[in-house]
Amino acid sequence: MKNNYIELKNLIEKSDSIIVFSHVNPDGDTLGSNIAISLMIEKYFNKKVDSVYVGNLPVLYSYLPQFNRFKNVSDIDSKKIYDLAIAVDVASKDRMVLGSVIYDKAKNSVNIDHHKTNIGYGKLNIIDGDAACVGSILYKIFKEWNFAITKDVARCIYSSLMTDTGGFKYENTTPETFILASELVKLGVSPTQEYRACYETKPQSMVQFQAYVVSNTVFYNEGTIAFSKITRSDMSKFNASDDYTEGIVEVLRTVKTVEIAAILKETKEGYTKVSLRSKTVDLTPIVIDFGGGGHSFAAGCTIKKPIAIAFDKLLKRVQSEIK
Ligand SMILES: [Mn+2]
Image (cartoon, rainbow, N blue to C red; front, side, top):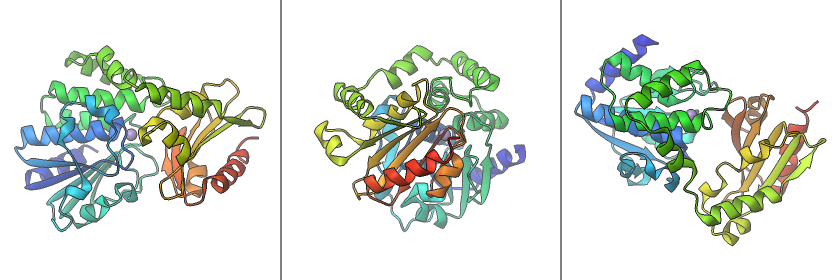
């Protein structure tokens, strides 16, 4: 792995134009990691970096330092051939959507990720399925490079770690998680400030929308399965943006009897976007059946069917996992 860190450094050194991609429906890890590596490259290699997102950029993460640096992929000249394209937290190339074209065209490509389902689509792949978040992989890389981590970069990495461990409580929370958190706090990160900025800044209508979705939950198989669906009309009733659904599926999993929870959301195209969480059941075989990906206890997929049909198909598949 350390050879890869050096290889990445060499690639950056010989590149003039660099672009960093986050995955579609970006979360705290992909955005925090994107800013962190972009800032490090700009500071220590003196290169200009385009930090790029696809789809919508959730305002929730606007507390991240230098959040304004993000550019939408549609604002990037798709004919431009970058010297180096880096994907962070992007489990599969299609999660870059339009960006995958630019990524493929780049002279060199790097794939930094912690999803076990990642097949290694980059020319250089730095994949650690045991890492809690991509931010923690970046921390190791920066340490190996021997570059001091600035407070802004520390905050971005802390945000990656905090959000991907669900606030230091998911199964990926290990002794290393706390060692890293400790290092970051020593660099000046305030856990209270980051927590409040991320989790206690919801609009009123978002909390009301989430309560509505939770109240519509249907329980199956003696309460071991919790499913709730969100239609476009639910969304418009609450004037909800896509990030309004963030965190609801975790609320369903807080029910004592629940083993698998799912939120199904009708997309603009009339398909169904699914977020799944479980307590002990490995979700990856389920989402792979539907062309999705993710982690064992947190995964997702988009089913190209209307929501009612997708609901029944997914429920049957989930029920087959519950003995
Ligand atoms: Mn992640």
